Length: 482
Image 1 (tube, rainbow, N blue to C red):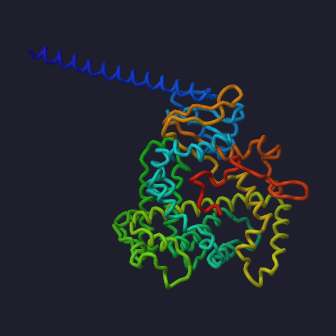
Image 2 (cartoon, rainbow, N blue to C red; image 1 turned 45 degrees about the horizontal axis):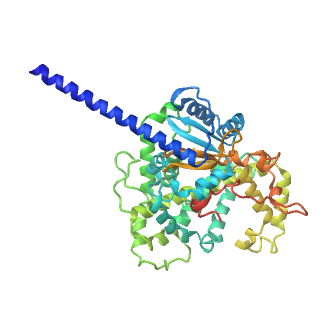
Image 3 (spheres, rainbow, N blue to C red; image 1 turned 45 degrees about the vertical axis):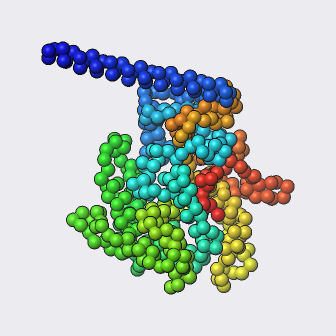
């Protein structure tokens, strides 16, 4: 009896396994037939494939890590496209199917004309959510649309043109630069400058990292936690990717706690990086105001107060503020750092910028320049445009297909046919590599030349479309680009 009982169990298990295997094979066959039919209907042809040195895309992964550590990742991206002599190719990366492209028409399709076929991707959400929560950079669909509608009015030109706020922090920045001719790390100062400005614009309270008299230890701890949470693997071995990171979790908790406390000291538990369950003091203070009413104690625009007039969800307010803080601080500091690096190498550009500043109608010693005057500085704008071309602050980006779809170019021997993009494929578009294409920006594409953007005499400056993408494009274009 017992033998018969066990025999029936094994038979049942064998039947279930057979059914499972057959159902998976049927699903695979049906999916393959569906894909082949879709490919035929849309005239798709295969794109080139990156060679695989190791299974599961380990080769591409290890290559990326090696160049990331040596600070040559962007140059390596360009090398891949040139080695394959194409602008679009398939590759496997840690077992995932990736499609890499630097073709403007493909990027236009992904970000605009076929926008609904893509999401920001599950991997991106998992990576950013611990720090940013659910906000404009991590949301998709209706939630993303709501985030954008919530934040868009806050970036009206009348709101961000606060010259007094900028002047105060720029003066702190200038005082931090040594006058004895010694070497100075401007990038570090730029990141402090943009953080001080962003926190005052967002919360009405600045971190004052550039003002020793006003800076506090807890502000410095906030900066350290924020920096680590953004890039926890910068100085770690590859194995750290697959291990728990307690410091990362604590840093994220500290950052969120800091936004709950009006930038005043936390009440600590035994572990100083784990905050108590503190009431959202600053957000609570903004929410007690009647909805829609401005802060009568100040004429300065504060994003927190504006958000509090539109929603009473404290977590939502906090995460949206953190999303904007990340964008407003890092991208601006990176742009300033890259621009000054390029300017420092070219006295000609420096001299022409000085000449344009000196040409302002009223001497700067008598009054500060108007927002409109700054906008009309053509050579300064050309210099920033060129910096964003040579050194885009978001050099690569990606989307994940949420339905079977196509991109218009990259297939076939000539690379001019559509390419099938199966559901689940991650599409990486390389902005930096695209900005350094000779066929798009000329033989001098690697050179820093602001003049290429200017109309001078009979020469017309650059007129760009999707081949120039410093602020992304389509419905998710940067709301703070202007």
